[in-house]
Amino acid sequence: MKQLGVVMSSEIAETPSVFSAILGDLSAFESVKNLLKDEKIQSVLILARGTSDNAAHYLKYLIETQIGLPVGLTSPSSVTVYNADLKYLNTLVIAISQSGQSPDLVHFATAARQASAYLIAMTNDSESPLAKIAHHHFSLLAGPELAVAATKSYNAQLLISYLLVCMWSGKKVNAVQIISEAARIAAMPDLVSLAVAHTRRDKEIVLLGRGFAYPNAREAALKIQETCKVSVQGLSTADYLHGPISALTEDTQVFIVAPKHLPAESILEATTRIRKIAQRIFWIGNGGTPAGEDIVMAGSNCDDEITSTLVDAIVLQRFAFEFAVASGFDPDAPEGLSKVTLTH
Image 1 (cartoon, rainbow, N blue to C red):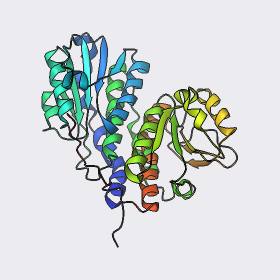
Image 2: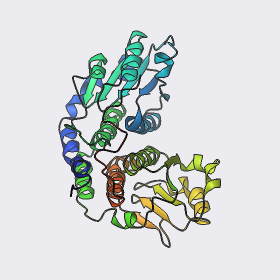
Image 3: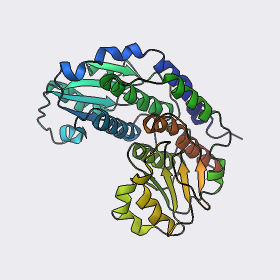
Image 4: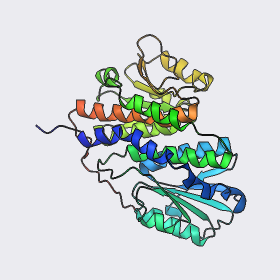
């Protein structure tokens, strides 16, 4: 009998070595150290789709909180469908893509450069169209990623996003801790076993996060949908309170992404209201407030919320992988999906 998810599992486990490769040469980021000043950057736009769009949300939070520049997410169809006339002087566009091949991203990036934007790309292929268009390209250094569900490349996107912003903000990087915590988490055999055993595909699943945890909540929801053929919501706890919580029942399976050092007050109202109805909360990370029958999938113990978040991506990927296998699905090749999605 074929063993399910062998490729996805091995690629998740490669994350510590990918982190080591990226952190082994921080001089690669020196070339853009003074970019914001030299190019008189006044705003930032991030170009991405799918999993990379979730990494884009992480980068958005980083730039807004650590540097203070306004950051938006692009709408590629503004160019590919509506032929908008862009005016991007003093604008930094950062394109994030595993393959660097999607035609709509390439089309938008080309239009942005023609509109005077400065373009940075991060892809897993230095020969890809996006890499060639960019003023500056950062390789994800993830090596071939064969499983349809992106894992190690997403983790690399988070790390490179973090390193970019550290370079611009002058923040020091604790490379040893990031690598060691990633290795520790990746090596834990029963990291998500209890949560998998208590999760059912026939009951509603909701993934919630706030601040830096929000991108991982979105990504966790996407990974479960991709690998387990079940509809899942991925929302910020704030947005959840603005309407969707009305659908909460005692059978709803609520997962909250809570990295170490997450400000407890940021999710207090949400958890208080959820506990009045739901049977338990599933926690991803070490920053939650578990009680009663709650189940915790342990995360990293990095020095701050930002780095804890990027390491904890491993936890949500392990859950999606093991939940898919337990449900009888092969997460390496989900039906109806392909590795490179060529949207136009």
